[in-house]
Length: 90
Image 1 (cartoon, rainbow, N blue to C red):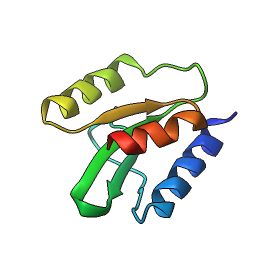
Image 2: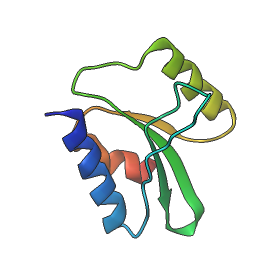
Image 3: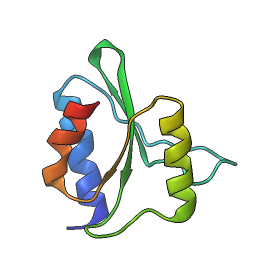
């Protein structure tokens, strides 16, 4: 399954929960996760979307660590079967 399809399914699942899932773009600060997940009642997290079996690059892993150190949940999603668990975690 292509990364684009996984990302579309994530966005739809977030919408179904009453949230929003904007594409996260951070000019001048490379390596940030692809999506910001904002759910009702102030729940937020970051999701890096990858094709099945692909891993984040070293810079992405560094950004994930920085965000986690700030207290934000960060997930790597490489299959649609993981979406429910990620949203539950957020």
